Image (cartoon, rainbow, N blue to C red; front, side):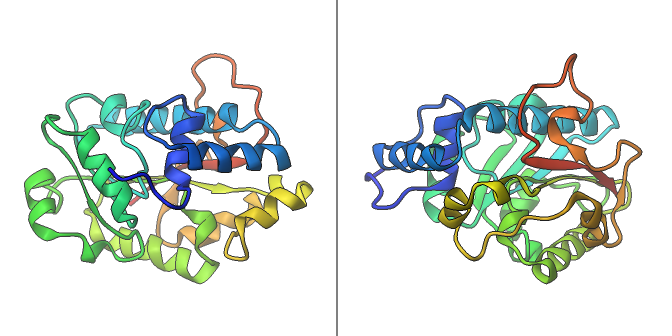
Length: 245
């Protein structure tokens, strides 16, 4: 792939996760953000660990097919690696990331990457859906919606959750997260995120889920969601949980 002219959040996260699918422009942007906020690798590793625990929990309930929105780079413990043998369709709205994702997944069976928007699940290529998730209308699907909520206002986010609810059968499970108020104390870092960045108070987030029902684990800092042992000592930047249809 030609070296990009602008940094990508997905590739910056790959850098923080210790991956090798990023460019100097992404490292520069990540370093600049850390200069305004502080170390980010621990936070994003904690979020990726939550993604893995959530996917495994969903799989343990009998779900073996996943639709992942805003997937970023499908490596460093992403869903198909956390749940080996599951059928997984990754989606993203960035064509460059989709191309890099397809390259990364070359040769992996029952897993693919395609352009897709969480706000419009019906717009995902139907032929790819039929091939990767052929039973999606008849058996529960695991939906993974991580790292996206901050880039949608309340109306758009509620609409996206509603569209996802309509797209899957009963018994399906949604893994979600959102940015809490952590960056409020770091105005320079918050300014880097731009005016379309939305932080939310945890106690008010549940209402945006609409018809989705949060599990008994509740909406908590992701490091404290069913941790494997002692939770990571990281700032409570991301909160999340699971919700069912």
